[in-house]
Image (cartoon, rainbow, N blue to C red):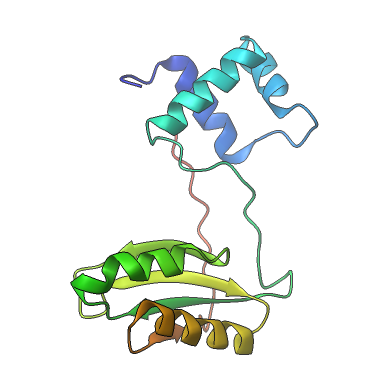
Length: 151
C-alpha cells in the first residue's frame, strides 16, 4: 500500500478503540464507513501487508485474569541472536520482543500461569537459546496509558 486515504484513516481511527464486538464486525465497520464489508476486509489486509497494522486483537489485563507478567532482559551475543529470537518468539506468552543498544540487548514481556512457572520457562528458554540467563523484572506498580493515534 503506497498511500493511506481518508477512508483508511477513518477505518484506523475506529478499530483502535471502537472495534465492534459482534458476529460480523467487518460488516458493522462497513456500515459506519458507507462501504462494503468486502472493501473493509480488502483495506485491512492491505494495511496489514504494508505493516501499518501489526495485529488486530483484544488487550486484556493479565493480572486480573490470574496470570503473572514480567519484563525480561537478556545479554545475547550477536552470533546467538537469531537462535535466541527463534526460541523466544515461539512461545505464546511472549510479547513485545525488541532489541536495544545495551549490554542487555534483547527485551521482551512474558506472561505465564504463575511467577514460578514463568521463571522455570525462562530458564529453559535461556538453555535452549544457548545463553547464560534471562533476567525477569516484574513490575512493582503498573501504569497503563491508553494510546490512540488520531489519523
